[in-house]
Image 1 (cartoon, rainbow, N blue to C red):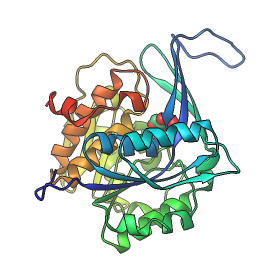
Image 2 (cartoon, protein in one colour; image 1 turned 90 degrees about the vertical axis):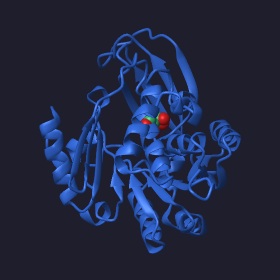
Image 3 (cartoon, rainbow, N blue to C red; image 1 turned 60 degrees about the vertical axis):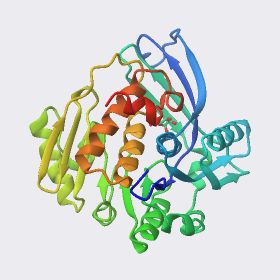
Length: 309
Ligand code: RIB
């Protein structure tokens, strides 16, 4: 709760998928079949993962997204409703299936993800414009890049028009993202691969992370927060720099950790915490999520994160 004891309002414009996850000792080579281990099937998608994180941490969350007219879409809707997420802007596309993510997780907790966007690819600027009333009331708008870029741009345009702060998780790693978009963001939260893509700098240590953060920041965004997995988090906020170490944890599955970080960061910012305080809390939430298998089923609730602080 904020000073007025009202839950922050978070709007997420983004993807929802069904995740098919298989654990494996190692990834197969091209043409090779290997036997994996545990498997799970659950709703996922970067947008939905971020929405569920914010909801589990106490936010009043609206998801703007698209599902297919199929069992996966129904399963996702049921979950969102159970999490008290407002689904009035989750649209059903009768012509395309719900997005699907094939995920392999190796014994180090690393993953490979292939996404078939399905209905996500038809979430249009008009669909987002229909959610303007929700976006204009938000404390923060969260966007990512698993939906068409012109739809992301429309969401940002509406948010800026109403003085709503926008936070972007630039995933999947963007091949190109214009300065016109980046300069409208309150914060950008790339992981290592995404930060390398955005900056053109290979990140191997704090020095290169700082250089990458500076290049991205020069493109017009004040807060650049690079999540580096076991390397912790590198933060550039205006003229302030910090490297926050990763928490000691037995890593089971890193899938969705960046989404948990993003949802938790936005919640804490909406509650009035500073950038550094929000990063520390988001780091704690993400480290809980990597200690369990799956994306959405591993997202912690507020009390659990608070107990680790
Ligand atoms: O960030 C993790 C997510 O990426 C998974 O849930 C999967 O659906 C893909 O969108």
